[in-house]
Length: 340
Image (cartoon, rainbow, N blue to C red; front, side, top):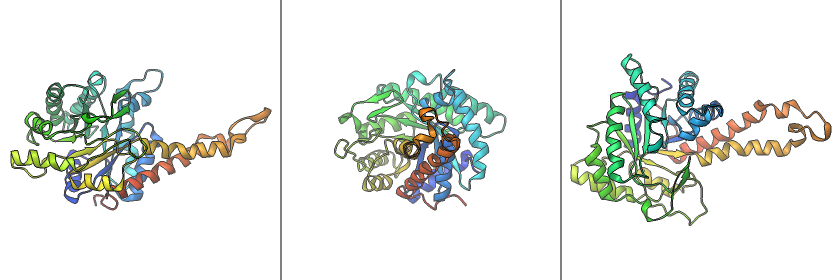
């Protein structure tokens, strides 16, 4: 069962929360980065999450039309085939989608899965993200209610971001300031609007100083202990222990201590993009610098086909990214936890 069914995805998330580990959620932009992520999970004997952002989907759609839905559907269908060769289970997810891209990305993808479910099949994607952090919390949650109902009907889990993640990703940016910390009141309003599972399961991207990208030490102040306050504040009001399944955004460059605290407080998914991008590109740069006279036809020479063949440096890139995914599994305690 390489691609998780709805029931299996729920089981994965339940096991992570109970076991205080999280799944690396790896952004991919090609069949090659998909294989790298799958390989990394397999080598760590960890299940995991593969995700496609709006920019990644646009890239996958080709630079001629840049159609996000085409790109996302094509890679998801590809994943359903090739993942069968890896001895792990993965869920397919779409990353940050702001309001102005909902009609061109998440809503059509939910419709694709709804059609599949109506035919007695499983959804194409197992979860989608609605990023309403640029909207007022009231508008954010109103749209979240609509999307949660549609997602639940298609057997899909929704991820919501209720307060901003700093930095920039795919054109969505927020300043690094005090707004990057979710309050208990924000969490209570979320529970009031979206429920705590009875209206459909959702993952909550709460903010505790998270920033996309990698910054030098001291530039970002993470407070993962804040997640405990959110769990306890909402849990006491509704009589439910640890009511939220949290997502750790901006995970690249985080310390082991920050990650451990987040896991103890209910994080079940951590996004990685910047670190894996670098891990993919670094071996390619090394190859090009070491073999410049082979990859280039210098001074009228013919170069070396073996060195500029994309398969040569592509294999190095895949191995580099896979190693970083395996490292992420160790950091998130998911190594060796794959479903039997």
